[in-house]
Image 1 (cartoon, rainbow, N blue to C red):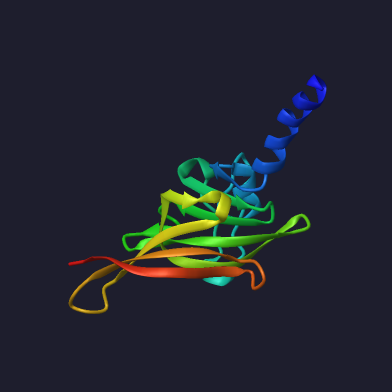
Image 2 (cartoon, rainbow, N blue to C red):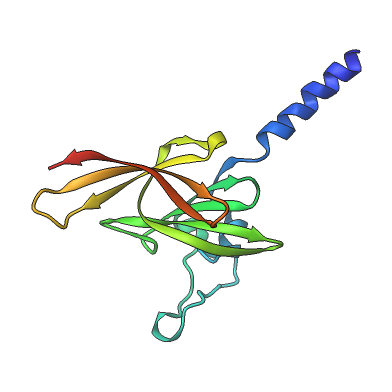
Length: 161
């Protein structure tokens, strides 16, 4: 009986916690996703002509990744190459065998402190400066796995100034 209890205590955490996780600065994954490169081998982006250029070094930025069900990755790069004064993009990738495919992207500021990782609920903020009254909206979103894209669940006015 003690052996069975011991095995249950060892196995259950791996079954329940291995699906979703937060990863900070995984250089190998970021190079596979073509966000940056590490080591001595410079990697180039897949853009054409005048936009074709080397990727930034992974050590020059911060790369936040949320892995969902081992097949979906939300990536939020915080580097000057990927963000600007108005915010940045975060991206949704899907793993297909050993390849990764970007399936969606959102312009906004991903809230890294507030998320419900186990239920796949995330939040971001986005500014609306198209009118005289500036507004910041807070969005709640998840991943629509049937359509392979982000799904906005809720939009609320966070601040007006």
